[in-house]
Image (cartoon, one colour):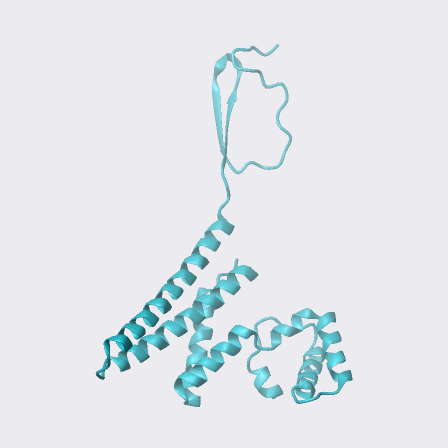
Length: 205
């Protein structure tokens, strides 16, 4: 069990190798029916002290991808390839500036991508045989729904990145002596405003 978990480690590392080894040991000892209460308590305490350790265990998105890959193919080798492709797509979609919110949306894109193409494959196989109009419509609706979900996931990621990275620009029209206008645009630094700016039409004493 510990070996399988180790193969799914994320890029983030725990504070020490001893903590990681302790985590795997406790997970191994508690992944069974009626585990010892003190082992469960020790696992909770360890994760409470170092929350980042939980990232060493596959998250729900990764677990669902593994399950989808296994169920959809029934072939261990092909399932391994599909999981690697999901991981590669997630890496390609991730930017250095991405935060936790973008990571959640990237997971949604990868899962929607997986499901859409899985349904598309089954739809193609369905069309090789003769079926009723009702069955054909059901498969078309299912494919269209998967495609909409896929496109919405992509759009949500793009919109979120745009909103997070968008910096509002500021433009000021400052009137100087003689009514001359000075236009200042851009991102202004945090500083105190200049003193004694005359009103339009006024002259500086």
